Structure formats: structure tokens, C-alpha cells
Length: 74
Image 1 (tube, rainbow, N blue to C red):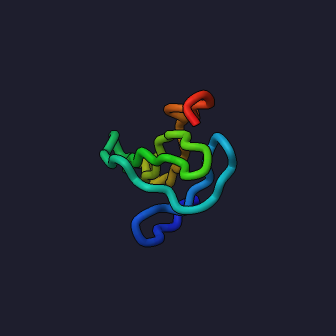
Image 2 (spheres, rainbow, N blue to C red; image 1 turned 90 degrees about the vertical axis):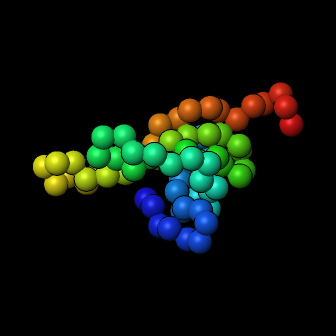
């Protein structure tokens, strides 16, 4: 799901399905996850991308929607 490419990441947007580079707005650690807040360049939806390896060695990667695109401010 993630493929680092220059400044952004190749991830699929959970709102519109766009697959391409996203600008990373913020990064931090949460337990064993590396978290990145990303914004879609097409629909402007904001979401967090989590990836990490649990203490038992299991890889995990997922996204959580944070802020859907604003429909009225175009």
C-alpha cells in the first residue's frame, strides 16, 4: 500500500480512490505505529495512514478517515 516516492507516498485515498502522491502534513508515533497525516490532492480529504510491526512481529497497515472533503468551499 505504501511506496515512498520523493516527498510523498503512494497510497489509495479512502474517500475518492485516488492513487498517487500525497503531501505528508504531520508524522508521529503511536505505540508501535508510524502515523502520517495525508491530504488528497484530488478531493482534499484528510486521513491518517498507520503502518508498523506489532511486538509479536505481525505487520499492520491501515488508514483512518479524519476530515472529508468540503463540498461547499470550492
